[in-house]
Image (cartoon, rainbow, N blue to C red; front, side, top):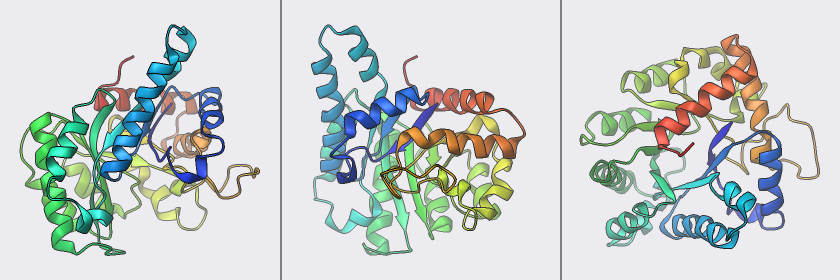
Length: 274
């Protein structure tokens, strides 16, 4: 299994980050992609992975665990108003680091409107252009902005290596709009939510299996059917199997097949080493 979206440097993980990773590997995960949401956080994610590589030294087991980590680099729409004038140069430098496998999290959020919408769109289009120039895929956020996100993707410059709509929770119209644009779709523990996830469970099997990926978005969106533990509502990558299990039910396949197919999609999309 590959978790394509984890906020691993979130303060909720400060006390047990390394133990969290060991639980993830024990649960059957083979790779985790850290989500970058601003310039500093993206740099910190890349540095965290680089530090792991340096610390592994000649320890083959530690080096193997390090190769299970990658990250994205981007600026979330919430932070569009605060993006510095030189954001593109700084983001490009980050994106050229070997730890970085995609541009993002970028997109539009018209639900909270923490940044003015024109600034969000300008920044989103700029990151799409950067991804195209670097031949990197894009990790996209959409909340209550699907029509505008789709317009931006429809007119994005050629050369981008692909788009995954992260943490998809929309309706059937929104899903097929993204599928028609050739996007991949990331599904989280929202699909496990008895009440809020009902609509998503009804339509998720519309996603072709070769364009489906799975993610926890930890520490957020803990699967409701996961067993209770000392972490309360906190989510973590070790709970990805609950998402895979629920999706396998909707596709009418076994969990191993769903895990294998989505991991293969992630490896191909993000160009991860085997």
